[in-house]
Image: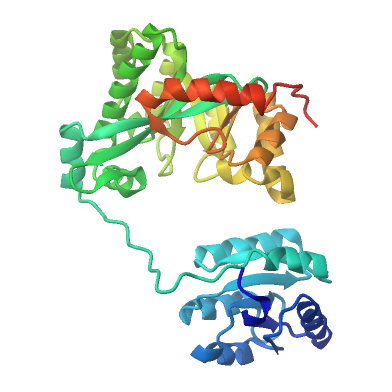
Length: 410
């Protein structure tokens, strides 16, 4: 970390006593380049001087004239390149909302402190600071036309990657989620956020889904032949469910591949609000009757709702990663997770938690009675050829590092 004396810090708070307290804490921690302001307008003037722009701002949210949220907007307009620490007497949910807003503006937030701040709490956040890389500009993602995406589908340029899903109680690998990639002849591996929306906007998503499903079924058949029994989850958008022949298509393709329908999970996602439930409800109900498993994906976000749980015979509820990662240490996120988990249990649905990023997330899930976990702590998406080797390594990791234990909810 850069020497404390070289880091320029600005404390912004309308309370003189708080400014004195923060200044004293910073001095005791070895920070000698500290300025203070009691209002946002004065702070913006300081930021306007290139040679004196602070590396870090300690920002109070609730101030007269210009509140902290408005101040952040002005920072964005001035292309502020430093970091923020929020210091406020507001409640946890208010602070979390502000942190999310600041992150959306691409300004680093080291964390937040409740008033009165403590030296220990302040120091914990200060050690996270690192200087921004000079002149580092984020390259804009390339956009692709509908014709390019259409050609990619037709030429078989889409490939499937597979992200493992494991039983939380035992660590056993129980399935994979299929995640499509585009093997572009010039640009290399292109991720779905660069072409899925194009496919949806230009009526190509049905062709894309059928290509992904066909490849996934062929791979499931290969795994089955070597004794590897895995549930294979494929994402299906509501656009796929507009054609009444979709259920028959899925059924025929699965039968032709020799894969039991119970091994196929259709994860239903919504990019657009359903205007007419009749076709999707018929298709999903028929697929359920034919013993395909249905999963409601990203529950709690977008248009997924309690009404869908009431109307559609889902077998599985997939809790969105925004309610999983860090839930062990965040009261609001934990409440959302617990509500989703409790609802799924009452409806006798299997629960999948995505976004398991670290050991803390894993241990949290083990304490709650969640069924299945998915996320980078377990594995990133991988080509099919890498899966068997990964399973061996994972089983060894479970044996040494993650021994199975009781899975009693707390």
